[in-house]
Length: 111
Length: 115
Image 1: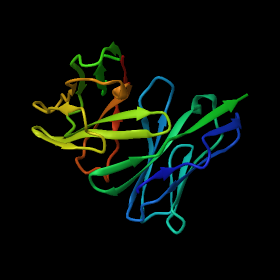
Image 2 (image 1 turned 180 degrees about the vertical axis):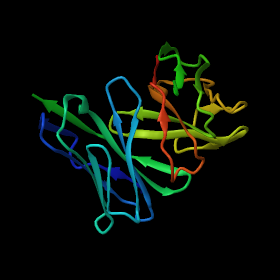
Image 3 (image 1 turned 30 degrees about the horizontal axis):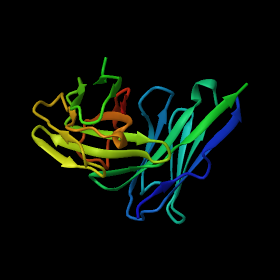
Image 4 (image 1 turned 180 degrees about the horizontal axis):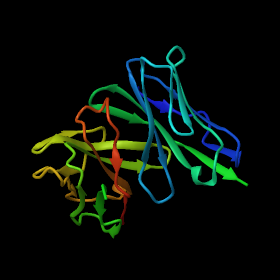
């Protein structure tokens, strides 16, 4: 069946370091991918997206990399800050009316 | 302020007692959707709506109903709640009916406990 997985359920990084959150997707038909951030007690918040015709997309302090060959997606956060502590979800869209969310990775930032 | 508002944020109820979770967005978005979030399962779509009077089942629609009489409102109705519907519910909206583009704006969530 369709699934979106994450390699690590929890990632701990030191403030100022770069963070890399990984995601594996299973549906080769997926052509659109999104990363969301969910802070404690809040709803998910859009971070960045990427289409399958791209390998890399950069935002403010964040970069998403897409490797279609191995069906792998990653989110890189530069100079991680305490405010980055949250659960991060990847999501894939195999069709225009479907979005499949992963289970999330918790990012913990320590001083 | 652009937002998606859900009510109630917290609710404890008993099996079989009908309840409605309201959702309202002030961004004039066409697309709205309901999700439930359970530990280890991520966000799963319950129902969605592409526009007024247009609703469709998501991945886990059993036990739920929705309506879209106005563009801004998309209530989630549990006619006869059961304990397996204990969950954290999120309403979301998007300016684009095409889920392959555009970002989803989520509400703050409604935590429902069914005893």
